[in-house]
Amino acid sequence: DGGITQSPKYLFRKEGQNVTLSCEQNLNHDAMYWYRQDPGQGLRLIYYSQIVNDFQKGDIAEGYSVSREKKESFPLTVTSAQKNPTAFYLCASSALGGHEQYFGPGTRLTVT
Amino acid sequence: GESVGLHLPTLSVQEGDNSIINCAYSNSASDYFIWYKQESGKGPQFIIDIRSNMDKRQGQRVTVLLNKTVKHLSLQIAATQPGDSAVYFCAELGAMNYGGSQGNLIFGKGTKLSVKP
Image (cartoon, rainbow over all chains, first blue to last red; front, side):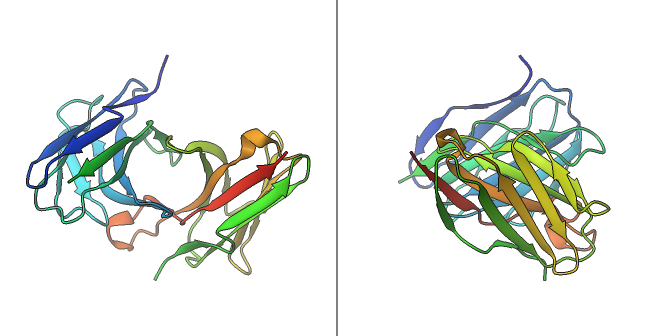
């Protein structure tokens, strides 16, 4: 089965701790994306990567970091510098030159 | 600046009726639009897309209409079913000079569709 997996589905952390969210895809897509979704809101772009070893800031990159060492993987680290980290985080991927993005099931992060 | 917004945050329809979900956009240069469906606690799923050189595109039970004159996009769902209950998002392709989202999808806030049996 081809698709995007995110783990874990639910994640709980104490304030002040960094936490890394996993995103893996086996669709052979070049581009990958991280979005944040807050209740009743649309998706806001955090970071994206169009090719291995390269990534770009989205609209709300402050307090987050990413890496793209492999085509299949695009982990997101929520650092302690992120003021309001509690949210639903969505990872997506798209084919080179394509605009349609395929989404993972999401990770709900709660920081207390 | 660019924005993608919805005329109605919630929509309630009777099972079997047709649903129309509306979306306004502000970037007249955008040449690609897409609709997603998001069920509670899940990731968005692609429904249908349309390029600016078209004004209508049909899928299975869904039709997207694009009115470039008034910068309006709509999603029509025929014979709405309980399984259609979800939040629907429209998104447009960001213009190349629009900050962090240039060349990427910009999402609206969504419309929640509730289908009454």
